[in-house]
Length: 187
Image (cartoon, rainbow, N blue to C red; front, side, top):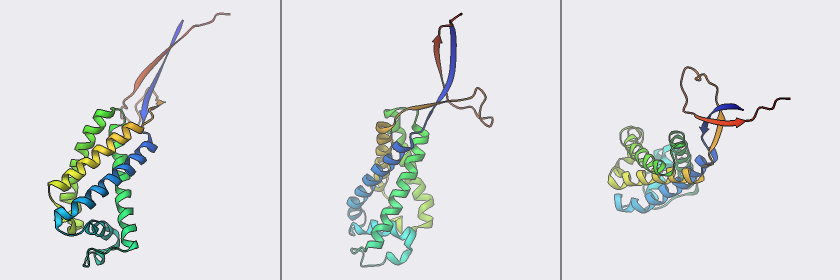
């Protein structure tokens, strides 16, 4: 009897990451459309204008803040979902080997980290988000991360690929050893 050993590593399920981004993007947008009136005292359309202004410029920010146009809505949706998908992919790369509980926990921490990145980096580029700097906006980021992590882990199809014995570019990869026993036939 001979024994064959194959080293494999788990790969990211890109389709699951994409859907996690879309789902968490919907939740994040919905939460912030509901929370914006409480945070700012203005209408929910303010959040759409804030997102749209990231690519359309500050000309979409002035009143009347309660009116939105098709270009504003499309720009806001584009910004929201592109960022949500990118962040969900990053989260999937980090958590794809850990399972549901870790996906949720790491997702929550990831969302909280995104809030602080927004607070200290993004708000310097887009200062109109400053008005949203509060605990409810932090909570919406945490919920985004939880949803992204949970949806990714729910949809993930675990895939493994063989790896060489030598590390790639001098970097060791996490891998699993799969052993199979084969009977040797002697003719």
